[in-house]
Image 1 (tube, each protein chain N blue to C red):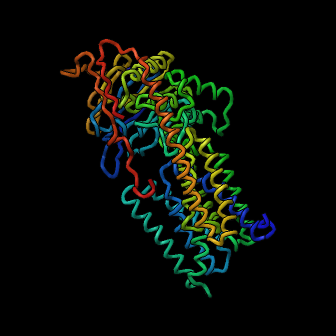
Image 2 (image 1 turned 90 degrees about the vertical axis):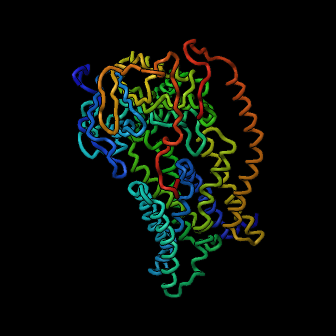
Image 3 (image 1 turned 180 degrees about the vertical axis):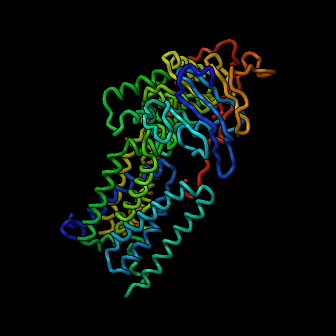
Length: 297
Length: 258
């Protein structure tokens, strides 16, 4: 465990663990709403923020956060109002954000696409003291929202129309989800990079789902997987000199595959148990009704 | 409505609404009196679901007024008094959830900050018992049959102990055993004094419960009065065909984020 003696590894492991917690914690709501790729879109938009940070010589992390939040809110607004051709508007937002980032960073004094690469694919070993402070603050916000408002976010993500009738502020909660997702993207930016961040939001959740029946268990297991792969990937990259971001994502996909293989017999057994229970003849069908039922769902 | 039992719990006056620039409601009047069970009937595309969605605020009105319990909808805040069953073929989302978790989300109307007390948990158990799903409480909703999904959605609406139930095609794609359970559940609610607005494709097993029927055609009210008698083949005993809604149940969404 000699790697713990290095300050840069301590910072890297802290940042990685925080990403392991926050990315699946937000991602689960995106997957629940069937917007699994939203994180990817926000990542593209955040590139403009990174470019802007270089151009104005301010912190790229905070600038990326600001731009990602604006982009996420714009996506949410397009979802409300842009019923027709909303996907085209979103595509323009995504690729405009990406092109904007490349353009701005080349305009910046001494900037080149080489600077951008550490944000695109992560650069854990260069995480600074200042970065760690920003990541801690942003991660605290994400955990507060995703855990503190879990019942409200669950309701809105499960069935938006129904949630409206329970009196929940649906639009405010949707915006909050978008903002939280944007913040998570920038938390993860230094660790796995903007282009890979979406994987950590989605894949741990998909892997956890292979084993679970409840939302609460899916949440807990997804976070556990997230932390394991981010820490595991960081340590692996220390010993093997491989890029940490890519290592983390490949590890996550490996976990998904292993759990899927393990879960297949489990699911089969559950299906059999459930079929056995439903096969028992308990329904007393009134004589005046046809006995065949036309269930087609 | 001359025969409304007292002040209406739902009142739509001259309501117009459009979807994507196409008029769907062309000035409809609809009232549900306290303790009354009203069926909203009509063919696909007649505006039944849209009418209901103007009541809950999912579809904005372009003209006329919508009142719930005598309060204009925009200022109505007391949503715990309303139980809503949207038109769905599934209660499942993109992530596994248990029957209890889904039904509990309906309790947020009363447990505003998401803090569940003993009474809230008891209400969830009670709602599951009402629809005969208490033994499936810990199961994943994705393991349920179509009728069981519908029972879960109804339990979710009942868990806030509402005075007014709004149900959009609760019998769509529901097996006979579940239809009987749903009819019994609804009868129980009506006996307790609940008012009900039901969107139905046809009256079916709920017919004995219905006080009044409003028939829509092409966004206009065609009939408002006693439930129409079934004619022709539809009148044969035992004829209650069930229309599964797979094509028109899913709301239109933009492609990229869904």
